[in-house]
Image 1 (tube, rainbow, N blue to C red):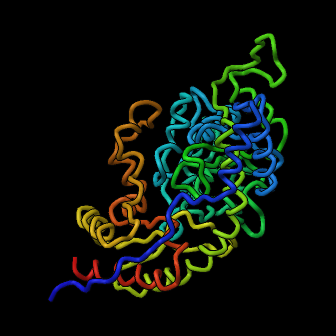
Image 2 (cartoon, rainbow, N blue to C red; image 1 turned 45 degrees about the vertical axis):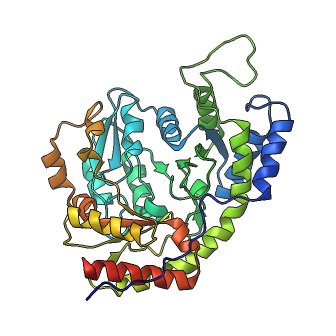
Image 3 (cartoon, rainbow, N blue to C red; image 1 turned 180 degrees about the vertical axis):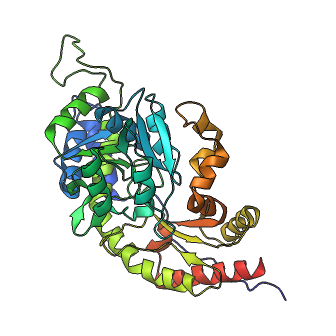
Length: 388
């Protein structure tokens, strides 16, 4: 008996834009200054982004990877130090530390939320640990209560990798209100985008001031005589990107509301499919922006999972395999890798190993579709899995 053919769902295109982005680009063009030192778009966006996330200050930068690198540098990460990162994350989380000369120490994640495991994190802290980097996977916040306590007890600061967490909240507190530096991404697929771009939010003005110097080649804003106060690089965002991001930010709330409404339905429908286990939700995370709709098929082989994703794509779903364990990529081992072997790290990270093999995610525009398309999505997943 052949597989049942369902009509392909019709999801909104991504990125989304309208007259606001066009007006912003023209505004940036006609102001006559196209870089942040002479224009007003970046300054305005930084204030709006900081206010939205409850942060003291925000600094716009070239991309999310640079946002992490800059934030780590402000925390004193460099040669001879270690940074604890989830083993299950996009590799920028570890590479940002490794490019500064630090050792990235992978630890396992929770198999329900896919976020940093607190007990594994505590066990990995040494006298060289300079930062703990929870990744808010798919917009689901890590256990910030336990991590904040661990940070206070150990004296090791937190840097939040919030590349997926624009607009997220933990027990009513926004990401910028959690007392730690956070790094965001505006890459093309993210919850708000200018194609590329990033931002760092700061809980205090002093860390912002140091970051500003380092993101502008160590040069103060008012300098006209080339007195570079510290080392740095050029991570400055341009005015055109900032004008687009201002429009994207104003649209974010309504998009999050739609995804929060659609997500429980999709999760329920997926959980009713034999063999499918959707990503869990910590109820203390009372606002999740849902960068991805993630689920597992425990027991499936990686090869079959990959073929399944190909079939989902063929049926019209924006489906992807999940991130590979960072220690299973050659790039992780080029510099700043720990002493353990791949096999030793794998034994220490069984949940990450499982996710690498059996995890699937759907792009967040899936959750911007109609309820009918959410039902069609689940039907397609069920049919493809049954046929496989």
